[in-house]
Amino acid sequence: MYTFAPRIVNKNMKFYLKMKQTGKRLILLPYVLAALCIWSCSDDDKTAPSPEPEKPVVVKISANKTSIKANGRDSTVFTVTANDVEVVSDVFIIRKKETNGTDTVAGNHFAADEAGTYKFYASYGGVTSAEISIDAIAVVVALQADRETIKANGKDAARFTVTADGLDVTPSAVITLTGAQEAVLDRVSFSAKAPSTYTFYATYDGVKSNEIRIEATELPFLLAADRTSVTADASEKATFTVTLDEEDVTSDAVIFQKYDGTETALDASVFFTENYGTYTFYAAYDGKKSNEVEISAAYVDKQFLMQHVVMDFTSTICPNCPRVESAIREVQKNTPGQAVHRIALHMGGKHCDSNLSGAMGTIANNLSSDVYFPSSKINLKYDEKLTATTTISRISKSIENSVKDRNGASGTGIAIESSVNGTDIHFTVKIKGAETGNYRFFAFIVEDGITYSQQVPDPASETGFTVVRDYVHNDIATCSIGNDPLSGTDLGQVVRGKETVKKFTVRTSEFNTKRTVNLSKCRITAYTIRPNGVIDNVASCPVNGSIHYRYAE
Image (cartoon, rainbow, N blue to C red; front, side, top):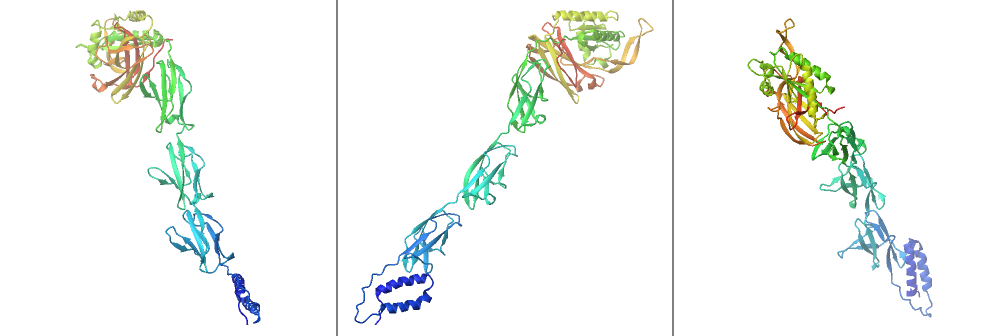
């Protein structure tokens, strides 16, 4: 009689499990049964061996990786064994949820989209394994730039690189500029025109990177001068150069000068002056301000050219007056520097022609010490009644006396800048002191080239005259700045080596003349007056031009 000994059955069950796992159970089944029959048969007289205790089935679960990247792609592979024999059928791999629930893993792979620790166990034949943990590690997205600073010129650029766990994912990443309004870059590089600190981050596959900062620095905007000092006589010039990021932008920049509490823009990129002191300059371009440059102007002890004025009191009904004008021209030729200026003041009165005298007739009458003409006043001091034979010598003598009166030097120099706008004359007078003192100022607008009638001596008669209808009159006083040529405008104290500046506007539409004034032939003849009432110096300038200080040779 054959019986299945428990010990043998248990032993052969293990064999069977092993055969089952190898997929050979169907082929070997007849052999197994035969063996069981042979091994289990015994004589009726023999006693069956004691059965061995059956070992419990032990189910285990393991993974080829205990940590994965939380990117939904990296995965771990589970292996389940029963009594150390791998089982692949009728096996369940179960994940424990944080909320005490579970779910079954499909297959034997696991990937995570979110970082965290995941716990699993296996179930096989009603037997469960111990738990194992899988750590899903967050993906590290890193943003880098090839430079931390760029020039704020709109051209210099920083280039970005985005990596996910060390893998370059730049083409698939999104790079964002932070700020009040975040902006997504449309490229993997960045340039700026405005100096600032810019902050960026990248996102890839829903993961945000670190933040990085790029400093867009102010472009080097520099003002330079080819010299740091000049002489204060306009003979030396400093030339400026303005560069932006080493590019020359001088022609488009504006250079400003700061001096004596005032700030003015230069007309050009050069500087010269006739005022001693220290000057400060800076440049402006495209909203930028440069560094400051200092240039010192050294005082030059130079004497101004002493100039003189002859006020010629004349009239169209004076036959000898043209001879006096000719004599004054000779004096001008013989004076060093052509420093004699003529102002023709046509007398007023019922016997005089107001076409040339106009409003100046009254001033002429008040200035003249002799109601008869021709006569003159030299430098507001010397009154001369002139004749055809003594005019040159008398004027020359008066000029010599004026030089002695001023000790051979003028205490002031005069520079004028003038322009015409419509019928208005705008001019600036600069008075520079060679001697500190109180001075006054006066000016006439004189006109040249006026064609009008004039009595002249008759060549055929010693006392007779004839009228020239197309006589050309020059130096005609047409308007004055003020009404009193003897006192003028108070300048206050003029300091040695410093400028006093006055601005004037003359509206020629208000001239009281019977003729039309031709501004293209007009000049400003101006003079300074000493405290004793004598003219100190004189200058003459076209109404649409300029003159600088004139120095003695």
